[in-house]
Length: 306
Image 1 (tube, helix red, strand yellow):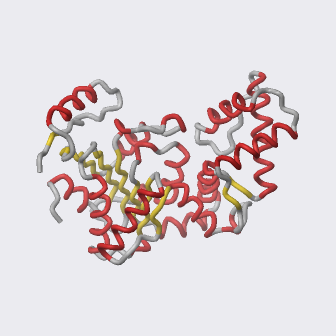
Image 2 (cartoon, rainbow, N blue to C red; image 1 turned 90 degrees about the vertical axis):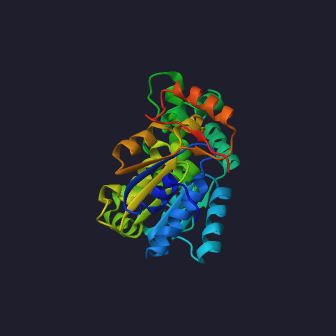
Image 3 (tube, one colour; image 1 turned 120 degrees about the vertical axis):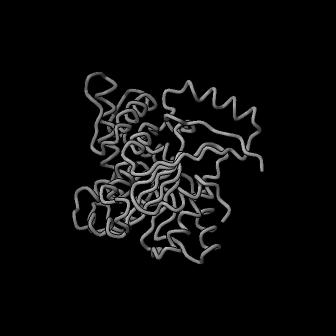
């Protein structure tokens, strides 16, 4: 395992609350893989490990690399939405959807909103109403409704209520709803939460700069980071990301949540070696990053030629 000093520090920190800031070209994926393998080598059972990322492709690559290297897979490796689905399927008696619920794709959601609008004789354009609804849901509150302080707010509230009733009637849920339901499942069922947190001893979150408030809260409830302390052993959380590479603000991704994780971390490791770009590019990126209000203190990159 040929790692630089900071990569090795991230890999070998296996208890407490670890945050890894990983600039472009810094070997982030390798660190994620090697850290999980290091957990396995130190006697952590695969069923005590959960790893999430944002795309199915990235999750499949992570899973394949782990199995190829060790013959083992964590309890769960996949997207955050997939983890929410996993929780809901596992505890069907603890939420209204039951076991055999349907997951709505983008086209299904559009059709259901359109049908709800027509059935309830809502007149304002669907696009304007859904924009208002998206703005409301970006707060991360699963029960949020648009304020009735304008014609758009009034009709958006009516539409969202109708849409929710339609989903319940069909025993179906959309992707954002999966997160909300999993969060409520953990928050309102103490026995479920106790079972899940006893199993999720080591949580690994990749691309953490793009979490939205609901996703962040769901992972918090599943992993109990307040119980992870260095030297105590047995529990860890590891959030890996780069606030300067956040790209999901348009769908409520909030990089300040990652900064909040840094503030609460027991260990922070900054992967500063860029193995991908020539020095001029790295120097330019540092100058641009210096003007970014989200840039963590001390965040710089250095070009390393292999």
